[in-house]
Amino acid sequence: MKKKIGLPMQILIALILGIVVGLVCGMTGMADFTTAYLKPFGTIFVNLLKFIVVPVVLLSMIDGILSMDDMKKVGSVGWKTLAYFLVSTAIACVIGLVFAKIFDGAGLFPTLALEEGAEWTKATSANFMDTLVGMFPSNMWEAFHTANMLQVIIIALFLGGSIMAAGEKGKLARDVVASFNEVINKLMEFIISLSPIGVFTMMAWVVATQGAEILGSLALVLACAYIGYIVHAVLVYSASAKIFAGMSPVKFFKGAFAAMMFAFTSTSSAATLPVSKDCAEKLGADKDISAFVLPLGATVNMDGTAIYQCVATVFLASLAGVELGLAQMITIVVTATLASIGTAGVSGAGMIMLAMVLTAMGIDVNMIMIIYGVDRLFDMGRTCLNVTGDIACSICVTKWEKEKVTK
Ligand code: ASP
Image (cartoon, rainbow, N blue to C red; front, side, top):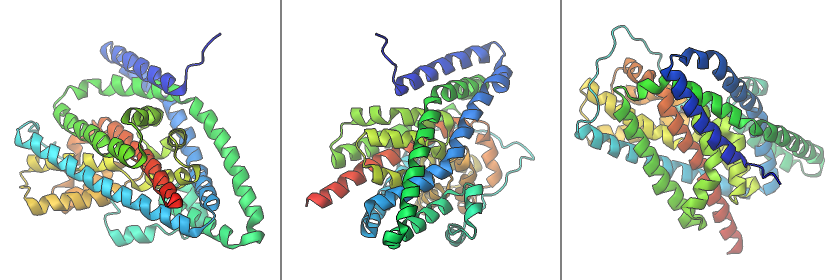
């Protein structure tokens, strides 16, 4: 009898094949071939994921709220989730800063010159009040149309609460949400089953086009960020899964593997959402809770991004000759935490928000151009960490809520 290979294994095989094909294409001067003929299939796949992301977030969040059947429970899950997000992101910033300072102190960061005439656009949402106002949609369709995830989350919260408040008369709306949620889940399962193709093509393209750059001058800055990502995953996620949910690190990472690999290659937390929902539920997260935590996490919880922003800021500050005293470091931790919250769960967004941290430090925003070329390589790791954090949170919150019931 033929044994079916599971999806995580298929993704791993696709990843390895992608690296091999990418290396071969890179070495034989066929990098353009991967851009022209492989990357488009990855793009189709990522587009498919993006296309279901708004209905997935909207329906699964409303459905999750309705299944909790009590606004008090929504509030209780909500504050626990936000507390986990905030604490883990602040720790991420400290980890990023510590490793960046160690690398910088040891003279491991390269000394480069900024290219003349390079231009960069500033981050637009640096102001907290503007961000707050921007969370509230003035037009529901526009929020869907522009896939503004914070606004979609607010809409889901309002609609979920209102359907609940409507009681018996809201029953039709409740059934419609449950039914469409089921339909979207089926579509999602189909799209996810195509993920090995997306992973293979994207990986081959990245390795073929950027493989040489990894070995270039920024390798040590990348290494610093990746050490931060790994330490954070081990220290914060596996430890919290162990301490709060009694889950062994091996079980946790094995269960989260498919989403991690997917995030690594797609560089989008939002696009990975369907896969992370699947992983979180298989790991024992309550369906209603993960339906609430994961979309929120994919929008505001970005620990990998926070680490990256700290490392990049220390590196660029050292290039720019900016001294980093205690006050400056606190500024980095605070602004990187806020910037990571404001970062959208899409490819490359963290680099744009880096401008916010640099501006707060008085560093020329144009300096982002120095890391621009290899940003995708930073992005792969940070997105992987971002998604892992969301899954860990959904497991911990599930456990906390269960403990509350049994108390
Ligand atoms: N790509 C990241 C994500 O989707 C965000 C970032 O660029 O840092 O989680």
